[in-house]
Image 1 (cartoon, rainbow, N blue to C red):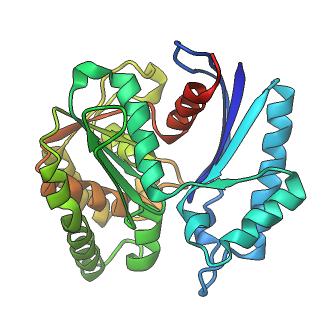
Image 2 (cartoon, helix red, strand yellow):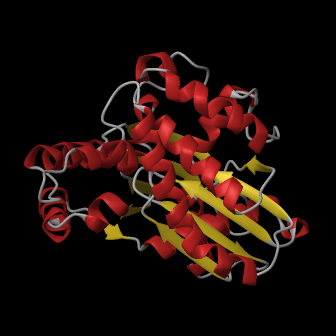
Length: 309
């Protein structure tokens, strides 16, 4: 079966086409994406602008054409925090449906955390024991913890790298007072859930997903994506502490010259690094592993689980 998953995120809009069937890992067949940065196309009233809607519709149409050309038999489309939190989110969904026929489903933050956790559990298996999973997106930070395929705790915090960059880091490079305010806000927000996570038990294995974590691990010496998904990639807290001041001193253009950092992601990498550092500090994590599967794979796995065998 050839499936297509269309992911409308705060930063990137991504169509992933996979060949999948029960009992086998989804096999990527094609990836079609653009850094739309939808969360930046929001006006002061928290409405997605007309230009943002037009760009989204244009990409959805192109994704439909790609999916049809590749023989996709089922396509599932979902949206995350940018549309979920926009004051005109329902209107955006309606316009996309009217203009393209694609019915975007909005995921809750808790569902994002749960489905990402499912993907990580399937990748690393039962031998990993109690899992703690972190994912930094453009609009939110997801944290999930548990011993089964469904996490015992699944939370979403408004600590996305794009959101925080817009709210706190107005200058390039960022000013010390901006960084201090962002660090204070980030730590206070994560601290609200540390007790809940502690009561759920200590994790045996800690995994991070998302482009932010992958970029941070890459600039700190992890293998490039060209070496494939089976290479272990780690991010150590001590390395992150060393790099945060370096990233803070750089302009976005200078960060874009680092290995593993795209020009589109460079402006928000500092905010993402501060979130990662805060989470690792407050949760007592000396290191974590970068996982290759995340939300899109979680959605595919849940779809396969729900199909008649």
